[in-house]
Image (cartoon, rainbow, N blue to C red):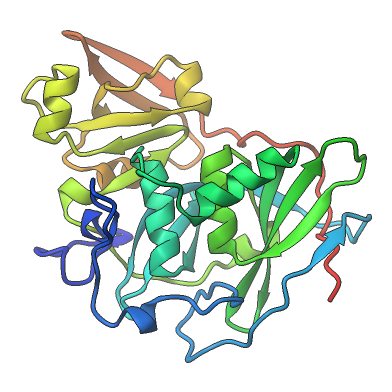
Length: 319
């Protein structure tokens, strides 16, 4: 069964470019923003909840903790939960295709999408500022983790490497903020294997074709708008345009501006088709056929484990 549900008018509920800052920097609005915005200090929820208790931000030394298996994932896309009308991110484990859905606030969804779409803001947004502060203080984001489910809320951690210190630092975080930081710093995203054993069911409402953005195995794709067709001199053919590339996709030679035509022999009409085709492949190689400068090429992307740094331990969080 398809994980997505499409609607004729994305502007009513679906998360689209109308929520993102425009070229002039103003932010569009959606009905009932107070209800959709996550409360400060709350963890992100996989389920509907009437509210959450404020959490106390803590910084804890990264001392050895209990052993726990973590799995690298990729942030595949952003949509809206059908039942709640709240933004939802999908974290995808490439080898198995398992997906963990996490509800996030509107501002965090905007922040994540702005990076995935490669938008340049006239002034730094909150997560841009945070990334700059971390860099300016001589630290780097080692990785971000989604490691616990407490009641109906997920708990995350940003793990920092401080220049001159041997010990890593764990910063308590909502997963949404951690993810917004990860997409800006190219930090690995890891999820506790326990959370992937039985991920919650979900019904994702995706934007209309022109507002979808999907990242699979390092290739970030969007619909071929007239502007993108002109910029990359693309033919009038169905497919999706690569606007970001890293990891496996970059290693196999996929570039910005490539027009992906098929995945495993299946034609692509919109970005979400890319996600569906990759999930249907399971742990088999994904055959990608693309157009570049008048020629067609084909490569195989291996659904291998994403980059990791060895065994993980549970974050040492003290309150």
